[in-house]
Length: 106
Image (cartoon, rainbow, N blue to C red):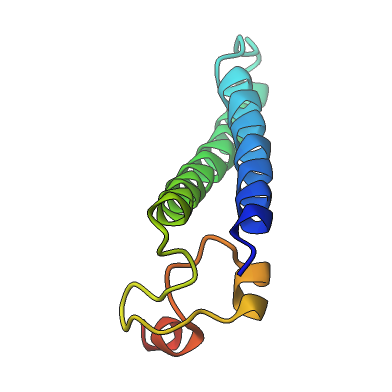
């Protein structure tokens, strides 16, 4: 298995997420509009941004775990059953810790 390829994919995705999280932090830190109707809209938008931030943070944790598995030499091995994770599955979700069968059982 070409772990260098997956390491590059994971690092690129990590960089992309970090950039998005920085933009979210900037948007959440902006000055609020004094108009009450606008503040209500901003509050709704902030809720959406916060959810995107949580999802991004969770994905970052999964990416870091996958990068750790690459360094440990266990990348591509299911953490639940110890079986091989298919290359197709890793191409689709390179940070997955589970083979298709184990993921379906979750």
